[in-house]
Length: 392
Image: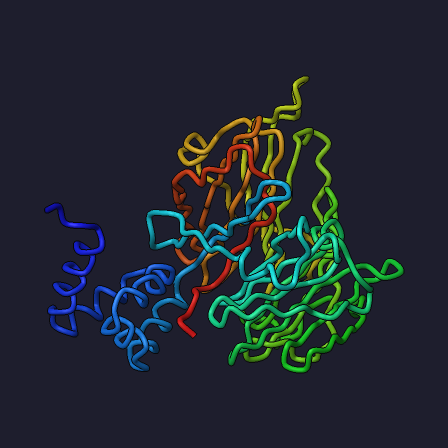
């Protein structure tokens, strides 16, 4: 009689459980969170190991050092899937968030993924014009009350500089900057109080306050991105949360270069900017990537007047990633001295994802090849980096 898949799984589980506990824990510590969650349902023994507080602390400590890239894709009026790729893994993982969001959305509602931090993921409903916060750890979904600017659709959120900051114990803050009467205003939502606060950014300061000079003590949120000048606000953080100091308006500029006739895409985040250059657009609307530059907006011993060129992507990497595209967007983060940027491009229905990292300490670029995300013919409805997911 042929052995069934269920019998094989049971036999493998029994064999795995007979291993020494130290080896079992070491194996589990090398797995991504989606794999851990699946294993919890395999056997009571494995579930007990994963639920152990010592294992949980060890796994969470290790997981926080990893970086995830999340891409949200969907077919119109059909279920959507959140895809996640870990910088220590070799494949994409599927997070079926559509079933978790269904209790708070209408049939046919268009949902867009905005940003993430730890286990918290932020979405926006274009139909209801509401923000939705999903905690993957508890599987709880929360509708965020409208900001002082009122209900906003996806097009409004795509233009604003924003940051989601997990503050522990399942709580988070959501920060975004927008222009109100041509002045940058910071809006901060706290899940702990379920309220918004807003404060107008201060103008005219030549230097950053000392409190902002340590990496991680502030975030930079862009209000406008122009070809030669941007409007950026520096927002102070304290212990991972907004510290109630008024944000500061910064207006870094590019020197005009008359010979620079290249088509440029700017990707901003965390005090840096990635500039993607192409040799213009041909008659078919196609661009070809020609250069990628990293610029820094943070000058610790001077003013915020000009962007400074930090580095260019080496020719060898450019040759490996150079492809034609019709449309491109990206995201950028800086954490622990590493600047990570992702560029997502589309060419005749085919999506391509480029993950680049720059080690500021070693002045070293790396390219992380990604497996196919199988997005042909699908709508890309959001992309973002996040810190490591945790078990609770």
